[in-house]
Image (cartoon, rainbow over all chains, first blue to last red):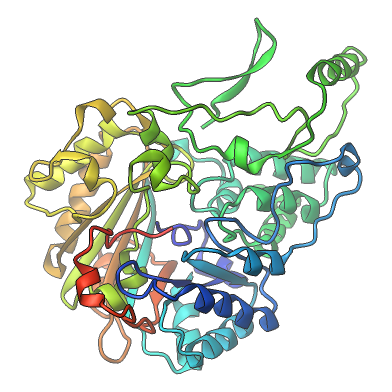
Length: 225
Length: 265
């Protein structure tokens, strides 16, 4: 689905949000694609992605099914990139998220040179993607524009909660949780860095951008929009 | 969806099954501790009486209380269009996934002079009753628009020519569902105006995506100006880099397989 396309925000707000993903296509190139998908993620690591993932197993920070109660005070919040790569066991879209354009465009160049034969897309501001293509020497093939949200928009939360929750396009991060995290940061009950980890674990494909989320929470601490 | 609440009578967390879209976010997304429920309730009650606030991790279910139901048709449709981890084998429905422009470099589904629309209902986070989407599919069908044959939502139609859905799924609510169509670029404005008209009759949000081919220089100077003329400010897009190749040994034969074009996980 279009799980990275409809993120809420202005083009400027995507300055720290560059999503690069590789997708196999059934009937065309999925056979033998598993090592290529793993290679794609391996190539991303030197450019320090803020998250990687796949829709079958999740992102680099996942829920645990057997937590000890002590986790309420001391919990491991380190993203595990290696687990994502090693755990990939069937063809699926894989994704790497970057918080700066320089890293994204350099990775895109390397991924193109690797000639994996998979469909590679970038989800970002239009201008950001165009500049990355220019850097990597890539001629764009197709483009899918997001026209934003319409209809009964009165049902949507405030713009900061919306910016947070729409970073999981599958809708696994509820706007209620996003609102709660904004409140908790404002009340000093959690730091933005801590609040972000809770939301990250709900994203089932790893497209949530914890760096952008942290920035939004920091802004929300002093100014509600 | 806000489907989970504490019932004031039984004083237990309860799921409103009408509103629940079976996204399994509660089951898959929460970490769990497996503590004794009686002890957890007693501790909470003790704190409540003392007006004290325990500040536990918000993404942890201390008692591992959630257990997935064995879903039957047609309720299983909810999960297919709500839980991104649902397998096709478990639901019998081809998910809510669509490749749209993501693999256009190898499927060539949207070609020069064409526009692919993804009209997604219920996103973000509001949800939609399938009976509401039928209003749009009827209107689109009446306008002579062809639905993407292999899109999972199209597969729920009993009559693709009229955009009519199976009767038994109309009262199911899902996280979101994508109606996928393709038209000539000259119909872009007409379709958007049609969507605007019908979405007023639907009690949810709509996320509209418009996909098209770039020219030989990688530019796209046809559809974007139309969208801007209609008042849209295009903030974000998905860009297909054109790096995909058809590498399956017998790809031509494979292309005629039942595997949907619009299918990805």
